[in-house]
Image (cartoon, rainbow, N blue to C red):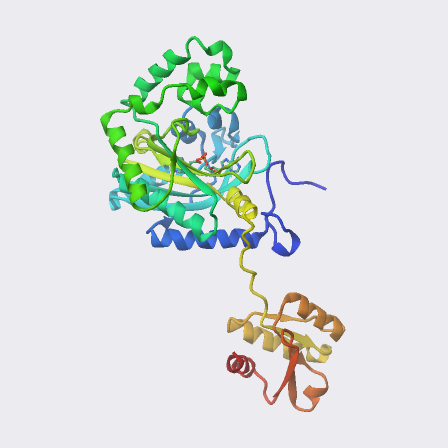
Length: 430
Ligand code: HAM
């Protein structure tokens, strides 16, 4: 049998699985995301799952782990290099420019939900095809926009019932002050390289800020002593960082600060943040984001400020599992039509079709199957009422209806029994 690719998952009906890959759980999260993004004024955008490779190399940074090690890149038949999107921001910016959204509206608020692809080593919370919900606010340079994105994510987390999530923030500076900080780090680490891991040594040469993200035990005591970026921030960046902290406090969103939070993508400027859940294992970052004021311009557009973030939906579900949050039960059928014998099949089909057209959730038994077995299936489906099409009562001019929840039964005249009669009967019962 051909099996699915390592690091990918099937999302199947809940009746077949208890884990996070039950489709009803995904639908629940997606509904909450849609409700929340709506009240924050965000519109959905859907971009292709593959793009020109260049878009990501340019956008995410040619020395980031994602670009150097994790992209699914292939050549198409015309020998063009294409890549399965490893994240959504670069594509949203490309689409914004290609469709001139920025010319039609000063601030664009966009969200997306969809699969992303990274060739990482699979483990709990880390997959090769995973799913993100992301939001992007493009065109607003004020810290209000940063706060809006953080508050929107906070709202979603609370609507999902999650309580044990920590928001961590930092400022990663801008093209004016980051080089200053990079020089401070260069000097600090220069005589310590032999005590640091090979990743750190590589990052020292290529992307020194990322050294702060090293998780290797033996590097921690040195990294913890590294100078904070705060001492190097320019007035603009330190003013913005101060306002972010003040405004988060004003709206009662608790946060911690960490000067070691640097994110894995090169496009960030100023605000960087992550939402962490400590009950889901090593892959504890449920969401991450920040400001990226240079990306629109470097993608070929005008200089436009922007801020955004993305959740990993699998990690959200792991966090819900860790906090034992159950999603509401999926709807059950109202009626289950039990067919006495094949002579009544057409009558039952007619009723069933009419009732479904009126948006009533109806299930239909299989004509020819024993009545007892059909009733068992009716109970298993969770249906409220079993409606008998055929049988003794039918011959006497009635339709027998069994209330499967309260184990009662009713008879209604079957004279010209129609979906209206059944549905009216149900309405009156409510
Ligand atoms: P990111 O931190 O690379 O940021 O990913 C965001 C979230 O996606 C992570 O916090 C995590 O929950 C989830 N995630 C990432 N990789 C995996 C994986 N291999 N398996 C499962 N989940 C994963 C971005 O992608 C930015 N585009 C976010 C952003 C939007 N920044 C500004 N706007």
